[in-house]
Length: 476
Image (cartoon, rainbow, N blue to C red; front, side, top):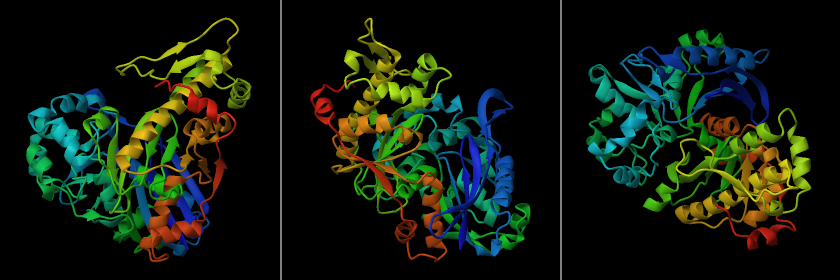
């Protein structure tokens, strides 16, 4: 038995076939990128037609040589917030505005004329990010109000793709949770927020919980994919990739997960998400979990992007193996070299490197960067524990940064708890597959599917340097 997962990312679109033990038995990918808007080349759109065509081609390749009759479900996972207004047939009335598009920054700055940002945060739980769905819809209302006259629905990008598979309009609940238009308490669209910005609740199709069947692959979609045997196969709701990456990592409730890439994303599946103005100011947010009973408070900050910058300055053309070997030879504290990892040009504070004297090397700077980012993780984890109402006994680590053993050990030492490196390399796809198998009735629940997949961990425990880091003053 197999499920077909269509994964639309900002850099690549992919299709993967997963068997009932969690093994990826087929995969294919294709590059993805935004396109400039005709009215302003600085604006960013997604070409939904091209994306579906690419996913269809990837599906054909991923299933090549496979008995397609073994496919029991299809599911779609994507990045959050983006979507489009469509007519009654599902035709786009305006292109999909990308989360990369700068046009919504001014909308967020002036949202107070509709509803205060504090009230938006309080009700939705979602932090103030200019790419949130609400600002796209306000931009459309202010600049293209005539589109709403013919609009039958707003479909998030995962649901645009699902509609092309099934002909059914639905709203993946995890996608709605990224919009800043839902009520964090109820998980439903907020009457207060929608009324404030002049949107009708009927614009949003019924919510589909993760693991529920939205519809079946139509003959037209199966032919488009070159896979006629897929006709009639159930399409199971997934949605926002972050939620399925967390679930697919093997993390349990109240066990924080750090996705370590260019950005560090720290999130937890918890029953509580109580955010104060100070939490929002620190970048905290909360989304709807794949389990409707849970919430996902989280924070993010620039992570491996700092490491990549250090590499470009001091290790251009050299491997990470060389960097890690040099950093491992430097004692904790980096011989007094310190780093403040705030290097984004848009940031309010500025980064710095301190403590440089004769005899210090590039390895000192590299280790100082890993230590600084680990201290930042420590402070953010403390805030997450406060918001989520839990106490960590371990941290699950996924993503490219999980391959760095030196950094992983520093994290364990700074946190003073074990860091469990997930053995899953495709946590988003496998997490979505777990819900797809449950929706198809192969397993009684997504939890049962996860147990059958047998997600494992490599554990890094605090070592002899833990006391040093606990006694050192956090530099954040």
